[in-house]
Length: 61
Image (cartoon, rainbow, N blue to C red; front, side, top):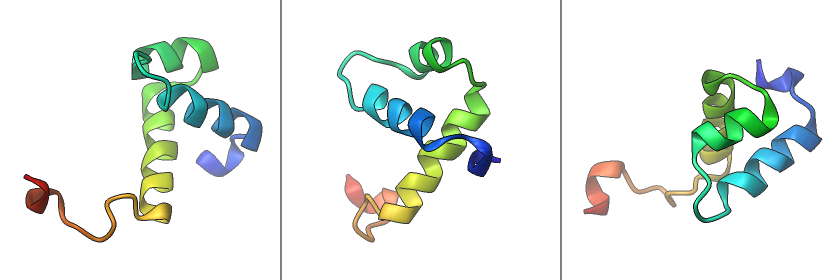
């Protein structure tokens, strides 16, 4: 599904999510995509880049 989204829109989502104070609801309004699509794009990027550096979520605390 997210392969249909242009790289420009993905870049805008990543720029917005990295901005302090911006929430998912704000991104939904600015990009005109549904919540599931945005969350899929973010989760694909998270898994692709292994942003937790191999640690499981339960080990972070």
